[in-house]
Image (cartoon, rainbow, N blue to C red):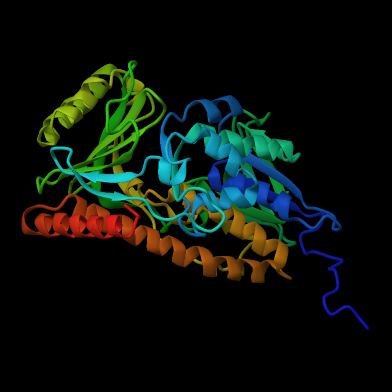
Length: 428
């Protein structure tokens, strides 16, 4: 009797060239996932990963931490489990690695009294429902995984433009310190764009699909405490509300002695971004404004501002995001993942999880499908609604987290009731 499920003897990307623009969470996840999922009996594609930073800068300049969710299969921890990196990530986690015994997300009032704590149950097969991890540590794990898998990475090379040639292949123009003559043309059969919210490739192909201002500004930095982080921030991360005064502040440890804080408030027009390595004068202006705007938040907040002494850590960012889109492959074999497709603001707390899941899901659908068109259709059906939901939640947080008057009172009451319910059900 014939085998009803014969082993495939061909794949549409076997021995083809896949180019990945961007070695952030999405690009690295896709690269590693494709290697792990590719059928061993089939010739693999040639995969080239590009990133504008050199390897040393890419892993050394990211001093903040991020959240990875693990309460369902849309979270970043679930993606890391599939990628084989979960245990390594838990070893490097700042908070949350011990599950119910670790820290959790909390909401405090202006006097730092707890309003709500959130400790959801982990998804099946995961030891924790969420962790905080330094971005540089997570990216380092992914880079090492790609390297160990034999992946080809070109650092200091950025894709700036993409077009099709006569035979349907994609021609990518790249430049950067890793390009000898200033500019180079690379041909590929599939371009996976993962170069972030300000993607140059998207700007060229979809000029009207841009980041939009979400209505709030964040300013903050990294507070340093050589003797140890003061409680309750030594064991938890979360948000402090202002009792209806229109400001709130996010806090999270970045290591055993540092806390990133981000004071936020609504503003009708986006202001200029400050970051990278601001001057002492520019950093002082931000800190002084934050001190004044956050005076309602009490002495612990003021202590955070006082302990922020390195200008390089100080920032002022207008919150921006972008709606996701589904792909039309009639033009070219180009797929956008992560922030290049659906950027979310820091208020989402889910950007890294979306990026990791995008990379895994696109690779999985490509390996399983009979054509690139089918793979991308199935991928979009997963990725687009997931990103829409996260963006909506982020906008909701911006609106109500900075509310005033009666709206703020209703919001605070709702959080208190939710906190009580979570406590009764063992999730708070």
